[in-house]
Length: 402
Ligand SMILES: Cc1ncc(COP(=O)(O)O)c(C=O)c1O
Image (cartoon, rainbow, N blue to C red; front, side, top):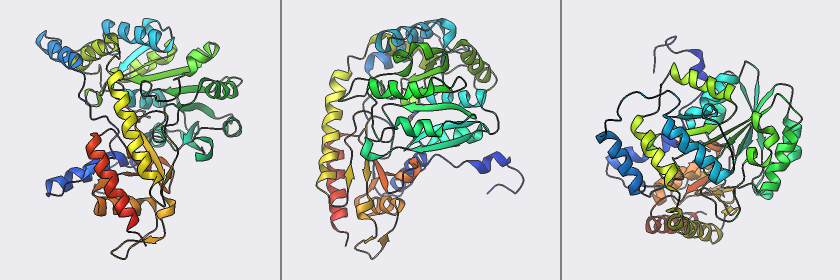
C-alpha cells in the first residue's frame, strides 16, 4: 500500500486490468508447482510467422535500433496505408496514420486528446475491460449501453439513439467484439453509423483489432461503409491479434489529420516512437499479406467448435456462437446458486471462475470484468489438445455441482 496522500486521486478511479490479473495468478500458481491452463489470455498461441520474426531480427542486424519519427517510419506508414486500402478499402494520407505501442496506446491517447470533464463516451457492453477505465482517466464519463445475447450481443440502433446526449463525444464500435465475438454485418454497422451521423460532435471509434479473425460474416468497417463520415471516424487496428504479435506492441490508426496530429503530440511527450524493431517487423507483416490465415482460421474454427460443444453439452452453460475473434462468452447463470463438492455455493461469475481454477485448473475471465456479470470469457487461442482437455475438465467440474 502506498502511504496515504502519495498517489494522485485519479488512481482511485481505476483498477489493474482484470485480464492481466488472471495471467498473474496463473504465473504465481505455476511458480508454486500447480499447473493451470490459461484460457483467460487475449492472444493466439501461434508463433509470429517466420518471415515477420526474421524481419525483426534483420532490423536489429541492420542497425535499425535508434529513435524514429514519433508516429512511425515512412516505410511503416506506407505499409499501413496500403493494408488499409487493400483490406478495408480505406484511403489515408501520410499525415492521417500513426503507429503506436499497441492499439491500447492509441485508444488511451485518443480519449486523452479529446475528452473534457463531463464528456461522455458510449461503450456498448459487454466491452473490452480497458475502455471504461481509460475514459475515466482521461476525465470523461463512460456511458455503458447493454447489448443482449438475444440480439447476438449486438448494439440495437434504438438503444444507441437513446444513449446519445449533447455531451456525447465518442461511440465505440468494436467488431469483431471482445469478449463476445459478435461481428456486425455491413447493414447493421451502417444502421448504427446512420444513428450517429446527424450528431456532428460525435465521433466513431472503430476498434478493428480483430479484423482478420472472422469466421462466418464478412468484416465491415464504418469509414468504408459511410465515407461521408470519414472525418469523424478513427479506425484502429494493429498486428497483435491478426499476426499473433501481441508482445511486439505495435498498433496503428487512420483518421482525420487534426486528431492524428494530437496523438503524435501526446506520444512525443510520453513514449515517443514505438520500438523501431517492431516497426520494421510490422512493416514486413502488413506488406507480406495474410496468407497464413488460411492455416490459422480452420484451426480456430475447430477450437471454437470444441468449446461450443462443451457449452452445449453442459447443463447450466449457454453461449451465442461467436462469429469472430477467439472467445466464447458463456452464460454461467445456470450454474450459480449451486453447491460445489466441497460445500461452497457459487453466487457470482467470480465464484464460478474461482471454482474452475481450483476444480478444473482452468483460468477464465469473469464476465463482470467485461461489465456482464453471470458470464465467463473462454479464450480459445491455445493449443487444440490442451483446449479439449480443459473443456473436458470444465464439463466434469460443472457436472459435479449439486
Ligand atoms: C478490443 C480490444 N481493443 C484493443 C486491444 C489492444 O490491443 P494491442 O494494444 O495489443 O494492440 C485489445 C487487446 O486485447 C482488445 O481486445
